[in-house]
Image (cartoon, rainbow, N blue to C red; front, side, top):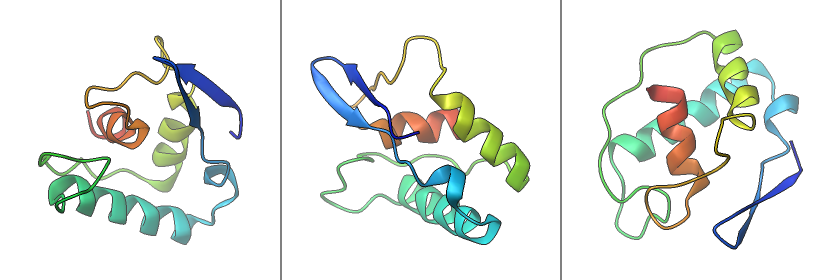
Amino acid sequence: MSKSEQKAGQEVQLPPYFSTMSDEELLSWYAELQARAMNPQPGDVDFDHTHKPAQPMTVEQLRHRLMTFRGWPGGLGTMDAGSPFHNLWHWLSD
């Protein structure tokens, strides 16, 4: 997942570590992402508004969603000035 993609003239590095994370590391990372999405702090570059919590999912479901995010039709578009993690949150939680 280390391939770069171009969107709106901005290079976005896809995190290479998702596929190598242990189950525990992945679940911890997901919990932190969800905490940020539900309660964004001032100055957070990825989340500028609150989100509802995501439905629980298994590690296998989470890995599948992360791996299929790259193949999402339309690529890594964003709704808030270029944050791929904001879009990723919607991909994982919607």
